[in-house]
Image (cartoon, rainbow, N blue to C red; front, side, top):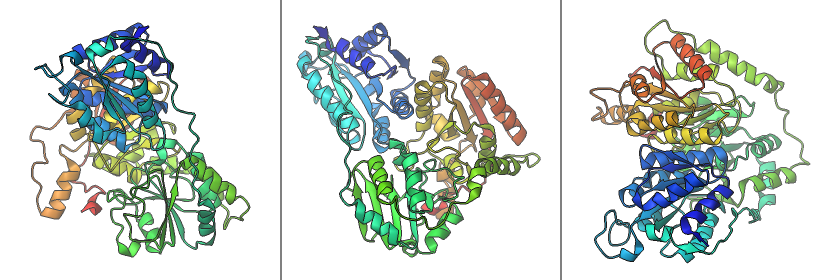
Length: 551
């Protein structure tokens, strides 16, 4: 016999979870004590929302389960935004919340999380794939097993269990649960039809969204694109799913998009293959009727939104992305390529770096612009660095100008778009992959919201590079309001953030850069130190970001 707390933590350890992110409180103290006893690192975050985002980043970086812990009442409520973001990013995160003793239910209780107070189970339902309260110890096995199945099978996502403090201390028989990896992936039944359609297409195009990152099917995508000779464009969230330097890469479309991607669509596409995107308004911004393809082939595990965004015939491809792509490559293996890939592809990485260095030349003073910053960052960072883009203009500059040399090394989510999420994501990913260079690309607005988590990175030795583009305003909103309404209201900080001093106050190495040379020196210093660093870059507050197509 063991307590519920002991068994739960024992399972987390068996599943390879090494770090749990959260803020302790009386109802969840048994779990925190057990984590310490069984060798799991409890990461004291600065806010439950930041803890949830860090757990999502841990799931992203480790390709496994992330765990966030919050106490009853407001502690759990504070994690709702992070749960919504994990759901939008299809990340398997277990949110654990506390609850005063279930035997006292119905009485006036501090931070009550039941239906008599703040009902956390109901609150988490819209932002998770499963949410339940474990009212008795003997229910743990059933609820935990179901939560794992919902988190890991089909379209992955977060789950939530609320466990009262007295239930955590109940003695129950031991049991063992494995992560649900035994379910066979689903293969779509119409792949021959898709292969035949692509064989006959005259102007096909491959559109990649952020969902590609969830499965990491980068090799399969490249083989698919090369075999069927598909030019590749990406949504903002799909940036990084395909190397920018590959000869089939056209560039991003929509917000932060390039003229080249727009021009390809304008030439008339007969078959658009959409992978990892549900074609939301944020992903198709600027795609008017004149750019619509004649036919869409849409890959997704969830049929809810297939065929509902563009008013053209849509062929659904349901099931596991990796398996479906492999099968399509197998079906097309006998076909002759329509053209050979350019020999220049072998030199593309070197050429990209040379171009970045040349374009990043110092302008001789004043503030840097977004394009310069992205090319300077590319010059400084190893090709394998993981960059997480936050919500704001800064990331759309990266979407447009930052060259991705290795697939799966740039991550951005543009639909749910939680401000400050990249700060937590980067911390969790760094702790999951301690040897990799991890970069958080963020802005002053996001730092105001979630920047205290820099202290978490410092305290747990996570050498994240927090690159902060500071234009002293909420830039996307500021420029959007000015463009479309004639003036901006409530978007400029009267007393702006000094991110370098902010970072220094939390123990991070800190730099404030205004020139290309200062940025080069700061990046070299931070990379050499292998410590948490805040690199603040003062950028032109009047520059118009590549986001005006949103309307």
